[in-house]
Image (cartoon, rainbow, N blue to C red; front, side):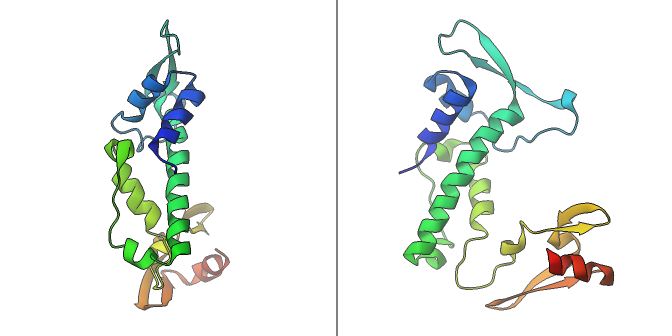
Length: 173
């Protein structure tokens, strides 16, 4: 079994703090949503106590969130593979239950929805193409920004590009 205790342990090791402090940090609101800022001065700090409690050390919130998201993505990927292997993925896509400490993490449900959107269910799902990036005018952009993604049949996904010159890059992606 793998779960939120692994997240707590990752934080304790990665931040050199106690397990109790890591558990408090894990439950911090907005942690899963924190992203690396574009400019270095925009980072929100988080104070983390050393294991002995004698002093604290400051870390950027996005770096702490990176540790958590890496484990959360691994947990959901393992769950997704197990659902695929067991043959019950189609039924599981309609409902999922989060339990334990992880369900109290702010943003856990949104993360679950995003990660399970690409789960193979035996029918086409436009969410399968969400990770696909296309080069458009020198920048990598999501596929759905250069064309419309549709599911006309249960086992068919179509992409209709907005501009003719994007057909090649879309096919390459």
